[in-house]
Image (cartoon, rainbow, N blue to C red):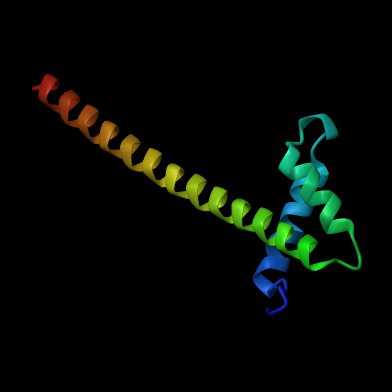
Amino acid sequence: MAETVLTADDLRLADEMSQLYGAKSKDDLSDNEVEFLRLFAVKNRSEACVRKLKLLIKLYRQEKRFLAAKGKTENMLKRERDAKQKLLDKLISW
């Protein structure tokens, strides 16, 4: 079986996660965030440790994509509401 390694993109996201989670209060961290910080601090990682890290990074990546899509959708809906309100205001003012 091929050895599991962290890619450059994985390491970039792991650094981002480490900074984000490290800035949070320990009481506010989820179980996954605590596990990520614990695993990321390990120097000589086993194959199982790397696989867990990759899974946690994958979850973080999916969460970022979801939040970006959610933000775009909310902005689109707000623009539509604003356009309808503007049209309604224009019709009422006639």
